[in-house]
Amino acid sequence: MMKRGFTIIFALLSAHLALAGTISYDVTASGTNFSITQAETKECDMGCSFALPSFQLPENATASQYTISNITGQPNKIAFNSTGGLTTTLPADTIEIEYALPKEGLKIAKMLTKTLNVGQNNIVVQLDNTGNVDLEEVTVQVNGDGVKTTDKMPVSIQKGKSEFATTVASITTKGTVDIIIKAYSKDRMLAQSIETITVNGPEEQKAEAPKKVDAEYAQQKTDELWKQLEEYEKAYLTKKAEGYNVPDVTGTISEAKSEIKRLQLDSEDMTEEAFNRKLNLAAKILGEISIKLGLAAPKGIGDRLKDNLTVIATTIGLIVSSLTAYGLAKTHIGQKKQ
Image (cartoon, rainbow, N blue to C red; front, side, top):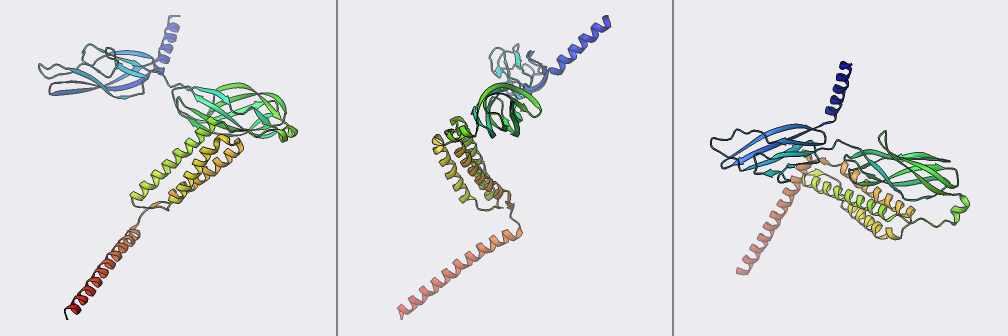
């Protein structure tokens, strides 16, 4: 019985240690004409407190300040107890660490459109990352009476951020239908909710007014386009400055700017279908820029020789022009003297 109890305690202790996180940091003691740094590595699962390390100070020296730096392990908080910051003057101070284990969290915030049609439908859902880690390959799946997912479009969501995920569903049942929405990161289901949708048949679809695009969705998508365009523009200028042979994309960049600006200005009055059509057009233009940037290559010897010959030819032309002008001027002056 005693052996079994010891085994259970050991297992619990091992599990506890396995959950602990490793945190490393440097502590520097500094004073008049000296600075000594000592590296520390600690295990911490939730809240921990550690004393300052011992320092071998110069003879008769006293440290006037202690500083924490080079922190790794991503603790939620690390600070001196007396100051709440990364510096202290107290040798007896303690270092307080708050550490949260990596935790995935996802919330289904809302379903943008709850009135759908019999047939294929794009279902857009806003997802909030409520955990403390970034999530990759996030997808949404919907199921219900006559409702089946046929395609999923994965997105990535940074911790603390939101993103819109789109899934394609085939719907065969019209009327009021309850559906289950499940959100996954890779193969792990992290959230689910139940929504009630209204499904129109062919006869209702004819009289149905076009749906306006969701303002938040439109803003996020245009922001993404601007960000991507800015990255491409910087990449183009960088490659040009580094001497790459890169196709001229200035015209395509201007076209993309005009298209995105028009999309942003008109989105308020656009239907969901019209917005997505224009969105795809802007994305296609950005795709053309990406392809052209992918063709960039460093200049070879032939290219550099060609550039040098162009410069030499231009220089020779200038010299010839100058000599010709000088000869004409000299002749003119000689004639005048006669």
